[in-house]
Length: 110
Length: 116
Image (cartoon, rainbow over all chains, first blue to last red; front, side, top):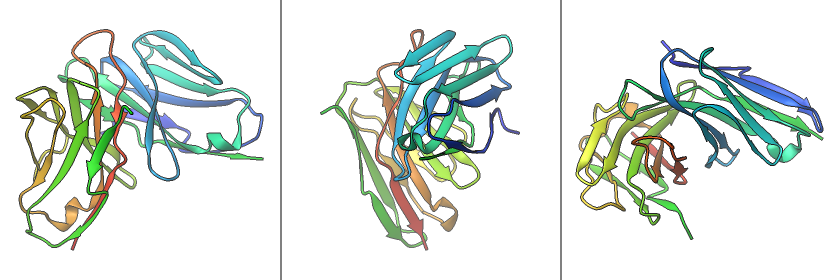
């Protein structure tokens, strides 16, 4: 059983396109974390959010607690955005444990 | 420079030979955690620590030990490694995750472990 599901698993886009990656979860959460894993393997934090919306540069993350759903949007995509995007949730009733989606692999073609 | 460091970065060992992967952070973070990443399974939490001398099991703690004697260090110990522990391991830290606001995690560069 996966507490966290991401879609799509793989995504190919043309440079400049608007991209949406979805994350759905089945447990009550206190926070949701979006991560980016570069082709070399390093993991970088993008957003940690508990409600509403956050924006950083061309990246926007939203969360709907009632629907147990979060989206990561990338505007004006660029080849350097090619990476695996991972959603993780901090369960509200599971201590301070994190559960992860299996990631969305994004390739942006010039 | 604020960072999480792990050593070694790559390790090939044999079944049953005890090993330790070190993790250190220089950001005075309270929360530290170990994860393993496997193809098709994604990241899974092994152990985490909310503060010094406080550790808790994650999703996949079997075969691993941890300790948190100092705030900056959180070593991962494999007492008797087995081939199914071949994986990519990440250490991470966060200022605090005990209550809102919840702070982001910073990840180390990863340790690729192969157990023959």
